[in-house]
Length: 474
Image (cartoon, rainbow, N blue to C red; front, top):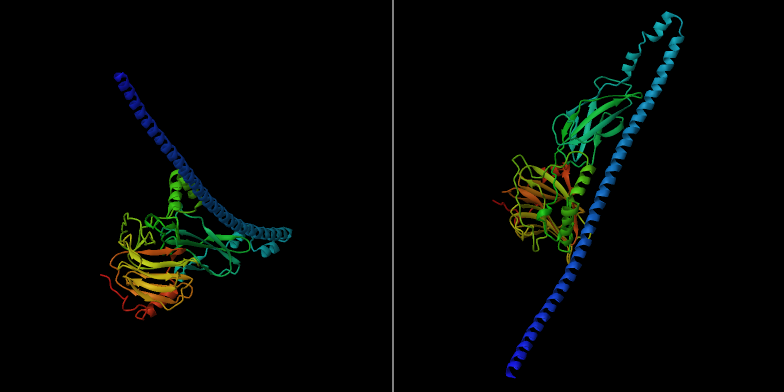
């Protein structure tokens, strides 16, 4: 009897243990099921975001392709219209020539025929109708304020000239135009004078080629020898690789992103993984001309390799430019969104820490606009502040004279001086930007405006910067 009870007790104990194991296994299964459901939900959400990102990329590609097609259509239409006008003029001249030849054939007397036609020959007559090639005078050409004025003259006086055609294209090569890897010639037709000004250009290439041809009412002459003019200016984009994750960065635009960069990371992931090859291929086909050179540095010395750095973090909502400045004079402009609550514009050394805010260290200089709670407009450096008693302009122009140790800010519209830092740059600097609750857009590829150059000469030595900020950094 006792042995049977012991055996039964062992069976009961075994069943209890098995029951616990089964219960634990059930709990494990429930947890796994819950995890699968959560993971599935997360994956579906990420998939939706990824598809949204791909749709956004394709929309961008579509807009770029449509823009390129429209530009090419306009260029081709203009070129064909010019050719049509020339053909119509040539046809009119040909009809006049035919009528003249017919009248000449009706003349019976040899002496009268000779006198009337003066030894008429068809080929020399036609040759006199073709204008000679103009000559561009580089000494009379002017490159200033993102405009180019091209001047030319005829090798000899020709009162039959009706108009001129100017052709131009951007290039990164000095000297004569090259056949390969060049952009198409842009055409300006029906120019009545012997000079023309192209304005509102973005100097995103180092040079521009120009050539001119003269036209009478019958035909266009040969092109002049091409002339290459230097149009170098500071070109840079924003460095997305080290920007704060709360900033959405694209080329020359930066916008506050309250999602903490999740949308940006998903978009970048979509670009890299599923759409990169196809989208890159599409974008290559939609762009004309040579690809943009890799951005490094501006100056006469060899490019400085920046190297990788951590992203800005904490309250340093900062993004830097991708091109260092280590010599020369340079200029760019910044425009803030109307509802932007806080932003800064300036320059910084590459060594600016990832937690550092512009103007709060001795490695950065900026002007700061605050539209939150109270409106303030100040200049900042090394955590010292100077209030600016001027209205905040719609666009801010930034002038950096690296060799002269000067950083000046202007109202980009009126060219009024807002503030100047005078210092000694001990290292190459990068354009720097901070933005919170809003966005900024940049204009690069700009020359130093003539008005700014003039003001710099006259304003040097004036009270643009206070003694507290007039710091020489060794």
